Length: 263
Image (cartoon, rainbow, N blue to C red):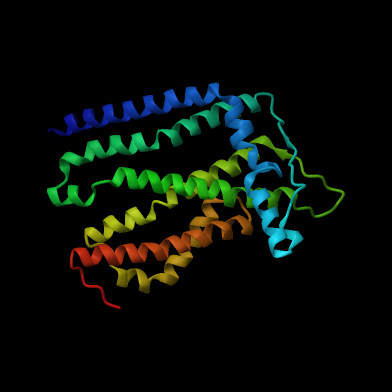
């Protein structure tokens, strides 16, 4: 195929991906009550499952401070078109999240003809694994990082005379940036696996680079989270654990292809 034929092929893969996102976004738009009341706004209520579990844990550990049963936030809209724009934005993001496996599959179909047989063998199941890691990161953020961040920031007061009223746009940006970014960062094991297979990374290199990796993780956490130290730490901890898991994955991948693994 010529360059222009490759470009035409890529264009159709992108068109099909965009159509999938739009169709799912329309479905999400029509399911407004589920999208907002049961999913997006749920972590702001004390009845959210994470808050209830922490209350149960506080009883078991005899630590009443862990139970925050009065965190219902007052979310307000201050722009005339704010709620409509938020509805459109969340619908598109929901379409993108739901279509993520299909987008990966279209991308895989585009690059597959250029891969060598051994590369196709090593990348078998990559779409399923990458999609699973993305959704795992999304759920981890939604059920742990998001509610804890909202609880801390939404109830923090410098004075009892200052009441927290959270703008809808601010709340949405916090929830979506945390959830989507953590979902993408959870793809780290897949990236490490392929880089190890092509000889770019080794377990020895990753072990020696722990300090540098920690600095990079803190920088990434600061970029993808709101401007507060609590959110950054909440994201940095699982990312560093993910880095340690990736070292193990790199070691196993390295042994399979007989790469030198100095300790």
